[in-house]
Structure formats: C-alpha cells, structure tokens
Amino acid sequence: MCGIVGAVAQRDVSEILVEGLRRLEYRGYDSAGVAIISNDNELLTTKRVGKVQELTKALELNPISGGTGIAHTRWATHGVPSEENAHPHLSNGTIAVVHNGIIENHDELRKKLQALGYEFVSQTDTEVITHLVHHELKTSDSLLAAVQKTVKQLEGAYGTVVMDKRDKDNMIVARSGSPLVIGYGLGENFIASDIMALLPVTRKFSYLEEGDVAQISRFEVKVYNTYGEPVEREATEANVSHDSGDKGEYRHYMLKETYEQPTSVRNTLEGRLSGTELNIDTFGHGADEIFKNVDHVQIIACGTSYHSGMVARYWLEELAGVSCNIEIASEFRYRKSFVPKNSMIVTLSQSGETADTLAALRLAKEIGYTSSLSICNVPGSSLVRESDLSFMTKAGAEIGVASTKAFTTQLVGLLMMTLAIGKHHGMPIEQQQSIANSLQTLPNKLEEVLTLAPSIEDLAEDFADKHHALFLGRGDQYPIAMEGALKLKEISYIHAEAYAAGELKHGPLALIDAEMPVIVVAPKNDLIEKLKSNVEEVRARGGLMYVFADVDAHFESDDTMKVINVPHCDDIIAPIVYTLPLQLLSYYVAIIKGTDVDQPRNLAKSVTVE
Ligand code: G6P
Image 1 (cartoon, protein in one colour):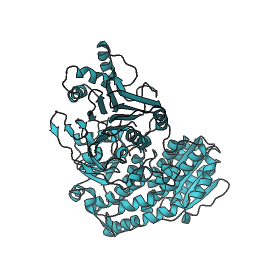
Image 2: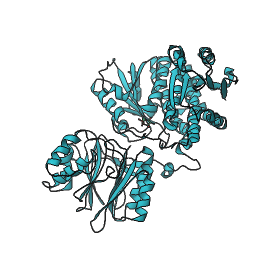
Image 3: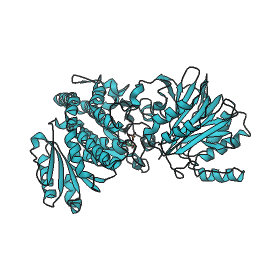
Image 4: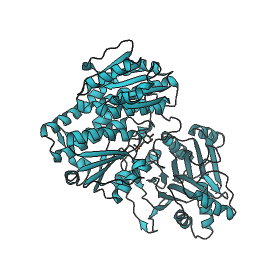
C-alpha cells in the first residue's frame, strides 16, 4: 500500500526521502514521487510511474535538493498509475500533499472546489486535500490551522503530510485511519507511514493517534488531538535492527524470511516458555485474570493471518475446551453478530494496521466483547495499542508481500494462548507440559524441514505450465492447505484452491484430470487413514498428486504420485512444520515463472485501506 516519508532538516533531505521510499517498496506500489522545498523557497517535484529506481534515475539526471521534503509511493485506488496521479499533489504551486487512505467524500469536495475555481489535474481523491488546504489557508493564520479546518471536512481514512513552500521550517501531518509515525533526530525530525522508512536516520519514534494533527519542525514537534488540544505522544526507542531491510545472501526477501523461521520461532519462544512453564506476563498486564474469565473466543483476521486463526480454532476447542469462531475481518465488521457471554476478541495481524481488522476490533468493543487480545508482529501498531492484551511475535521485519515467518510465529503465539486459556479450563498438566515440550522442539524441526528445499525445487518444474492446482488437507491441516494455495496464487499467479479432503466428493472431484496437480499435506495423525482414502479417490480419476507426507505414513512415489517425506513431528506442531514445504513450493514455482516474488502484481503488504 501507499508509503509516506517526510523530513525537516538543515541538510539536504533528498537522499533520506528516496532511501525511505526504497525501504517502503515492500508494501507494494505502482508509482513514486518526491517534493522538496529548495533553499531559495522553490517547490520542486519529480514523479515517476513504476519502481523507486525510476524515480532515482530521474533525480540523478535532474537533482533536486532542500531541507524540507515529502515523498510517497502510491498504490492506485482512484485513477490509474500515472505521473499525474502520483503524489505529491500540488495546489497553486505552493502547497504539496502526500496522502495514504481514501477520502470517501472526494466527489462532493471536488465539486465544491471546482466551483471555487480550482482546477484538478489528477483523478485522485487526494487532490481535494491539496486544494482544500490552499483554500482554507486564505482564512487561517497558519498552515496548522488550515489543515485542522481541512481534516474536519474529510470523510474516510487519511494519513497525510502537507507542506507550504512559503513556510519551509514546518510541515503539518494528520492521521485518521492510516498510521503515521514521527521520528526524532538531532536538529531534524521526520514523519513516515512505517518506521522501516526512517531506521537509517533515527530509532526514536512516537505514533500519532486517531484524529491527531501535528506540526513538525527541526527542533520541535507539537501534537494536537482531534479537539485541537495540545497532547503528548510518548516517544520510544524502536528495537529493530538497521539491517532488517537487507536481503543478505538471499535472492529474495521471501526466501530469506522462509529460512529465518527457525530463528524467528526461537525468538518468539524465548522468555515466554522456560522449560514447560508459560510466562503469562508475555500477554500483558492482567492476562491471567482475563483468560480465567474467557468462555468464548472470536478470532478476526485477513489473508494469511486468517489461516493461522483457523488453525487456532482446532486448538482452542479441542485442547482448551473453549468455543471459538473465526471470521474474515471485512465480513465481521459489516454484519450484526451474536456476542456470547464472556467473549474475548482476538485479532491476528502481521502489521497491526490492516484497516478491516482494526475496524473489526473497534466494532467488537462497541458491541460487548469483554476483552481483547492482539497477536501482532509490529510493536506500537494500532491493533496493539487498542487491545487490552497483546502477544508480540518476534519474527523481525517481514518485507516479502507473501507472509511467511509472521504466519508461523502467529501460530506459536496462538498455541501459547491455547495453553494460557486451557490452564483455566481444565487442561491436564501433562497435556500442558506435552504442548510446551513440542513447542521447544519446533525450531530444530523447522531446520530439518528446510533441508527438503532441493527436492521441492525439482518438484516445482511440474507446476510451471499449469494453470490450476488443488490443495488438500484434513483437520488442522485444512487451513495449512488453504495457506499453501494462497501462497501459490499470490506469487506465481496460478489459480489454486484448497479443500478439506473430505469435501472432494462434493464437487472438486469433477475437476480432476492430468492438468490439475493435487497437493496433499499428510502428517501421521488420527486422520491419516481417511486422508489415504481421499488420495485413492483422486488416483482413481487419473489425478496427479504431490504428497508431503510424514516419513512414517508410508506413502510411496509411483506414476500418479510424487511423495516428499517430511521428518516426523509431534501432532500439535504439525500445522507449523507442514507450512514450510508449501512456502518453498510456491517460491520455486514463482522463480520458474519469473514473477516478482517479493512484490507480486496488484498486491500490497500492509492494507491500510478498506
Ligand atoms: C495483505 C498481505 C497479506 C497479509 C494480509 C493481512 O493482503 O498481502 O500477506 O496476510 O494483508 O495482513 P496483516 O498485516 O493484517 O497480517
């Protein structure tokens, strides 16, 4: 999704801005632009369609420089990707604006501004902000006041930064629905939509809250809440490595992040499980009391995070004896749902900023959920700040649009949550210990599974000319099959569907032929014999299968089936273990197809608009 970087400094900020954009590329975008106020008060802009590299090339040919500037990567919503539609947008050559989010009443505002004589040069919703600020400035004594008046007229979501070339010592920023973080430097200050953009220049950040408008200058940051009252937003040091944006020895972020999983799981377990003892403080203040009183859990998430929630439903109901529903956030937020007594809402999100998930959490609080927990990978994100409890996955920055290590560490967090709730709902101590023991074996098991990469790479050849694929699993492996199918479609653009294997006979069997590869996840568990019958159903119809099977499950490769033997693991961690071969499969298929693995077409990493 769109990315924002801004800086007010004494030095030339052009490189800071472009490096910031480069570090935001992972979010997905289709054009990029920068506007800088030069030392002699000129407003200079450069925009390009395509990658940040195109913008860099243009700036090398025609450099622009100055101490105050804003930059943006745009993911088109209103209007095609083009230089006219790329941000920053200007009004009368004096005001420059970048914006993340969607202004829902842009049509009405556009008409009003056109009637006032403003000419629009783009099809974007953003341009209304630009002209509105310019218009309000005519009757305001400062840019801050003009922006405060402007945001009152906006409906929808925005994270926006405004500059005026006649006031190069300040920029005004405003947040409602789309995150913005202020970065503090020495004699210079910054703004961005994601701390990642600013890590080369600062580690000290504060997050704006909903409705905040702030004035950022070199030596001072003044924040005002939605009522215009001055407020403090606490600044904290971010504990993120400067290099988390580098690919290292890997060809793609996705591959690097896939291989990081043993370490990210180890980090996520560290300090949370000592031997078999769960450290309940991991979830935040008062967690034990909250978990004791939970009788029902409603999980909400989008995309990959939704699949981890689906696995958790199996765990919570079977192991913790607590009822659990899971729903896609964009559905939950627009329907009237029944809230059982003593219900906890659990949101799952890598970014903590997904607009639908955040809206669902807010709704849940309104309609009577008694407590909330967020399992998230980004400290300080909106979901974390707005939930009673939080569990931070320690996956480290995830850059590839297709989520990998965030998913497996979410599953670790969900299993620990199952333990924490189960403890209060009669889970026998032996079972608690057995789950904890299995979790401790997980990092090494993941290392073993990654050694399957060369055989999975060979397998990928078979998929390169296929247009469809079917993934099958049963029980807690059904969501893993869904996640496998999602990975394949996201990065290789092959249409893939997942089915609970027992459903085959109710429809998907009709699709089986030699052109439809069928991928099966087959750990050795109570359902293995049932799954073997489903495999026979496919074989009898001439289907070609690729089975990721436990070494002890006794599947053998033949003309109709290629078997990849997966090292044996405990049942409870099998959903996490079997995820990795499917991630590798989709990665190698995408490599053969030559797609943009880390930034697949049309997708974004952090979906901060509806
Ligand atoms: C986007 C990403 C997915 C991600 C989903 C939810 O669609 O491309 O990889 O799973 O958003 O994101 P979240 O940050 O809430 O987990």
